[in-house]
Image 1 (cartoon, one colour):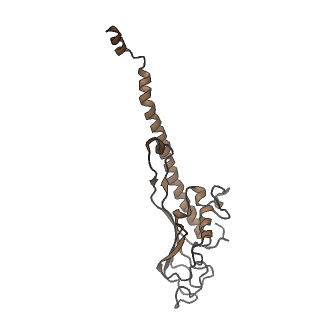
Image 2 (cartoon, rainbow, N blue to C red):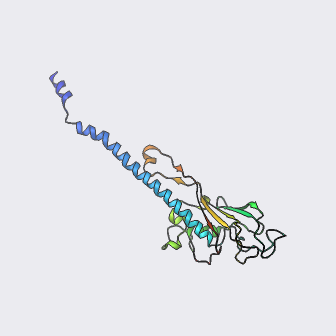
Length: 218
């Protein structure tokens, strides 16, 4: 009976029990903090990447391959040299094989989807892969956030009223570059608690087109 009482009152193993309870909670909090900070980094990087993509799109060959070389009367038989550019909007998506479609107005002469132009937005000028930019002005979107692929990128060229029919460098559209279908990836919580990746909301940046020629300086 006395042995049982002594066993019941024995506190020698108390700290071990406390540690067994507290340590997992502490580790879960620590790893969770790292994951959420990494999620914040991914959000910030995606925001910066779409800004870089929009800037490149403004001064590079358009993803709609003929946009910077359309002739004066291509958009309409009644449009002549020096006339205001008719209203148009063309949307290019890198999903699948890549497409450019007319989503408003008349887009005759805009050409087909250019994978080369899309790769310029993704990888930067003169590059075909991520993580090789040595200067900021050489960076593409996936240099900022590696998980970005062409399937995540959409580019919309919209007439703004700037420029004129027959302009040597083509129209001066508003360019909207957006990212969609990106996921927050959890490093630790995915394995510890089975947290699935969470889809980020779309990101978009709009800028006015400039040279629309890859010979320009970004």
